[in-house]
Image (cartoon, rainbow, N blue to C red; front, side, top):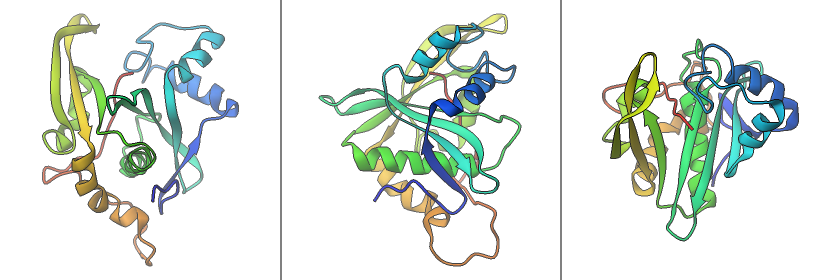
Length: 208
């Protein structure tokens, strides 16, 4: 069953009370060029409309330690006829490198695959964000396409990669990835543990 609450993080839907925090984070110096508007500054009304454009489900990933929002995860632009949708996630506090963000993404993916019969979820990842997915490339994240010199940033053009999370691969990985998060047993060490592959790694971001 898809869960909204784990041992270290929980998911909650975005509400209007979150708008100010989300807008400041999204348009702040750390994310402004890496997330939706890529340096543009939309009006508050345009920003709010863009937050929900094409969205099927959208949740904040919140740490249970202090109820601190760590990130945002969403599934959008679904094609129910063809069995796929698009997935995006962003770390709202880039300075926080806790693996709890990945645990939250895991809960969200389990929620999506548990509620809708998608065969796969697509991610559009600009080359300068690709390192965030290195530990799962070829395993959880399967390359499916590449647009060469598709995005401009920092004085040069960057490739854009299309990755996919397949349902059958996720079903194999989910139990291992979420084992500590969904366990009901006692744990004297409260630090979350995450390992996407034998190469390690614990960060994730994408461009919507």
